[in-house]
Length: 317
Image 1 (cartoon, rainbow, N blue to C red):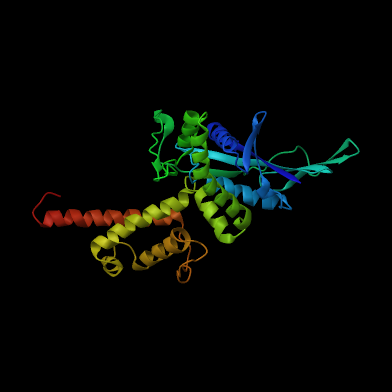
Image 2: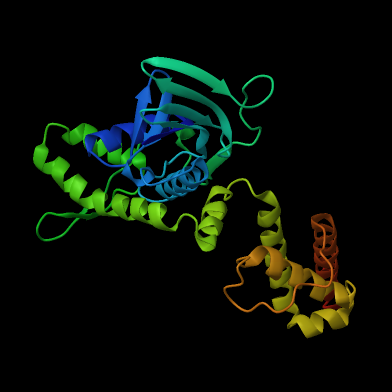
């Protein structure tokens, strides 16, 4: 039984991952065949269906791209474009969501093709995109500066935190077996922990939520806007002396204050698994447009009050 997951995306990132996993003999690994990159490894061998493989692969790739193997550059790093399965009797193909596309039956050296579906074979319009949000933009052309940390026995204990740094280390030490072994000793435990976690816990609800959050760091603009709107609200509430005093000013309807904070906390600022007690859901879901208008009004009123203070104190408004 053999599963192969075809991945696409940032060509340089996939090339870097493939080179590192090959140089350090890691499992799972990413190989290039022709123009395509494929993820495969022992963590998928026990999987009985494509949905389970998809869950493991998505968790693995997401965690890899947000730990030591994250890229310095911004933007999308990889996405799952299809899943392939092969054993001695058949070959099967699945779309990016793990849905069956086609099958080839293999018997006595003759391949019989079987297709289930209608019209052309095509991938789902929604690929499983795995995006990361990073702080350094490589468009500046600046190279990584490695500051390695060693213990008293010369073992690497820190300093290689991006894929570019790891690749530069490999290029500098590819003929130094001792240095390469130190790199492997440093990275292998991190990688094996990610692989083991992905193999055993990818189906858990909390893992799926963590994966979704990490995946959407740079793309979930609705959540991001709610968080930033709440920060503005938080600043103003603190400056006026708390929620009770803010409501008493009637800058916005008092019930709107509570509705906004309930929506922000219940739907956007905390885990949907309610790890911490958050009370009952708000009586009404507030649209983002309403929240934006509310905070805009609140901010305008706050600015107006501060300008009025200056004027009343004899300054210029």
